[in-house]
Image 1: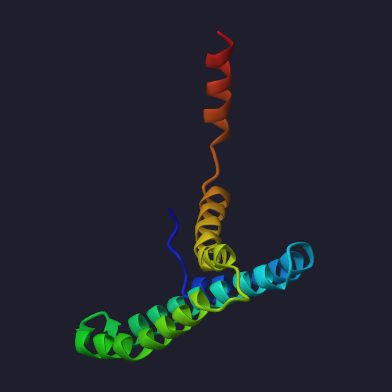
Image 2: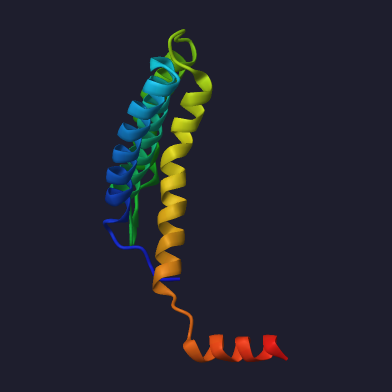
Amino acid sequence: MPPLDDQFIQRVYVTTAWLTAFLFIACSLYWGLGVGLGIAAGSTLSLACLWSLERGVRRFIRPGARDYKGLLLHNSLTYPFILAALWGLVHCPVVNLAAVAAGVALPNAVIVLKVLGRNLLTDPVEPSKVTADLKTQGK
């Protein structure tokens, strides 16, 4: 499996933002504004968690120097805001909760699909192996 580069998470943000915008418009037109808002809010909430995690790890976990107290402080200051936003979404009568759950899963799905695509495209099958497999299947 090829290693991931430093810009992988940035590309996840961009891809998720475009996908969220598309799904917001499509779901709002088809099922109503509550579903579109749920997907957008859930995706935004999940991206905020990913951003907070990425920022904390890049800032406090480095080779040779690990600042676990700083990471704990960072998470203690950022995650209450994210939990407050989640509480507000759960208690909002306009937003569809199933759509919020789908929106929260959206960045995770983008990460999985990007890694799968990267592995499928960068690990080519040797032609001699394919030819040998075809010859053994014919017998």
